[in-house]
Length: 179
Image (cartoon, rainbow, N blue to C red; front, side):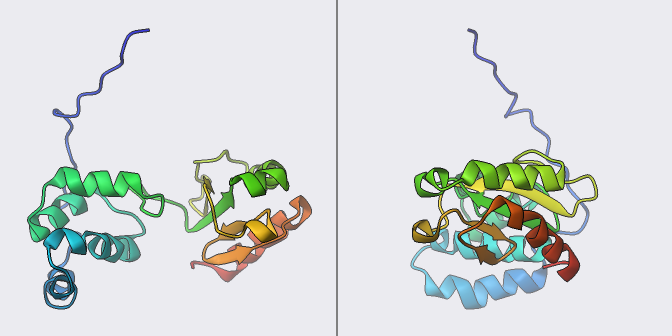
C-alpha cells in the first residue's frame, strides 16, 4: 500500500480580521499567567484554555497568535492541541456527550451506552448533530472505574449508567441550554 501524503507545507490558514487572542487576554496572560512559569512554554496550557473557554475550540489562527505571544514555535502549539483530548481544534456542539471507553467501562456495558447515545442523537462517535446542539465522543478514561459504565455530559459525570437512562440525560442537558 502506498503512503498517502498531505500538503502540510502548502496548507492555508483562514484568518479573520480580529484576533482570537484579544488584547485583554494577552495582557492577562502576560501579567498574571506568564510570571508563574520559568519558561513561556509553561504557560501554553493556560493560554490554550483561555482561548477554548472563550470560543469553545482553538482555531489555527489562535494557535499562531499564542505561539507569537509566547515566542514558541507554532508546531509546539498544534502538537499540544492535537495530543490532549480536552482541546478542540474544530467547532463542537453546544453540548458534549463523552462516553468512557476504558476497560472497566467496556466490561460493564460501555458499548450499549455508546449505542444508546448514537440512537438518541442520530449521529456516530466524533460527529455533531445537524442543529449543532450535541457532539458525541468517547474518552479513554473518566477515572470512575468503580462506578462503570460512566459518561460525561457537559461537565456532569454520570455513573452506573444503563442504556435506558441515556435519552433522559441528553434531554435534560438540552433543557438546561448552553452549558
